[in-house]
Length: 151
Image: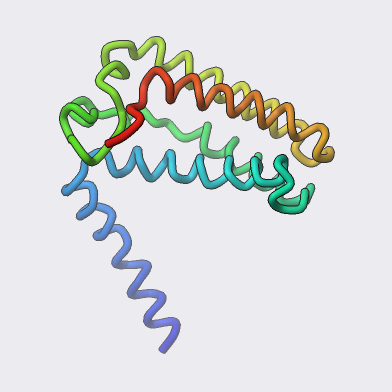
């Protein structure tokens, strides 16, 4: 019975994802950045001492971020999916589409910082902290420029 329910859920997920995208075409981008945030938040919690530093978990989180940087997000930036186009559904500013080169440069800085983080994540909290700070700076820079504070 349990396997049947699991199989039904797995088969229903693509349909649910398409239904959500139909309601909000920015949903895939939001989901992607939610994953980035989940990994980043876990690393920040270790750095701040909110959770115990765990080399294996830090390394896995960094590896997950590396995997996310390998995702081609071009289709996540569909025209017509800014907060001006979809009020209340996304905080992505129209400036992204007006300055794709700058947005791409911010993405490259993020990717470079993720690579640096992955190299040191398992080497202790003292090695993790500056790498997380650098990565957080790339996030902040992009948010300050390309993301609205509120919906």
